[in-house]
Image (cartoon, rainbow, N blue to C red; front, side, top):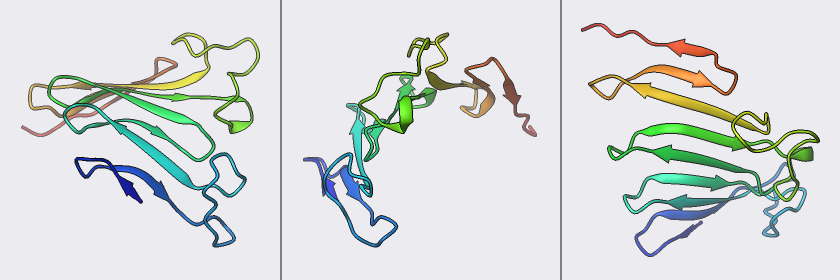
Length: 124
């Protein structure tokens, strides 16, 4: 594991199925993850050993408003989206999940990239 100058994890490595750790990004058994943070220390991007990324968009209260996972050909981060798709919101080249919060900062609705919603209710 490697940490940045303010002691946030920037790189982690995990053994592959054969028990070895391959430190070459993109290798078949590479299990290295890279993390990025905003100025408040919130995780905003994660890149796995294959180069696939997950982005998080946060509000001023450090709540996750949206998560975007880019879908790439063959699951490899250096590839583009599947044919006739794009990474734009309507392009079907990403999995997008939006979170809506109530006045107490609790998620009351999650909406996926296809418009399906999951609603949450809380006792008062």
